[in-house]
Length: 150
Image 1 (cartoon, rainbow, N blue to C red):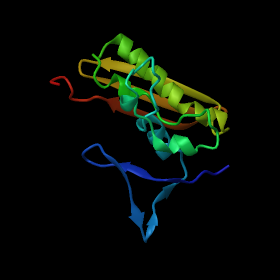
Image 2 (image 1 turned 30 degrees about the vertical axis):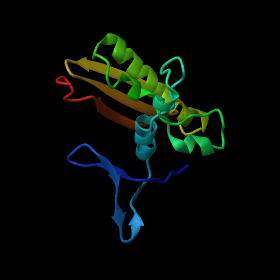
Image 3 (image 1 turned 180 degrees about the vertical axis):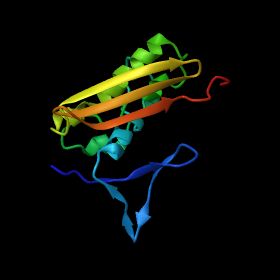
């Protein structure tokens, strides 16, 4: 099964963007853009996580998902103001894996592996997505880099 996705490329400032080539959106045959959107769109927080409904965030596109109970995106934004420690690393790994479960539910992957490393001012998450015994995605993301002075 070949999958085509819009290509999202990280620029020198760390921002992801799409590109137009010959009047068309540049595409890729991988799931990298779907991975990036899954991690960096905000999944709506529960009332137990944020009491004020106006601050729970969430991606508007979830209102139109054909699977009503599914929420795309991650809750990584809940960790933006927390100290970088082992507990935060464990939550980051949990939120990352939770945001990628749809790959398995929709039959695009058979296994998702999330690892992480703790550094003084950042967390680095490694995501591996497997189909049968083959790795189809192996990417590393740095979270909260250069936030030690905030």
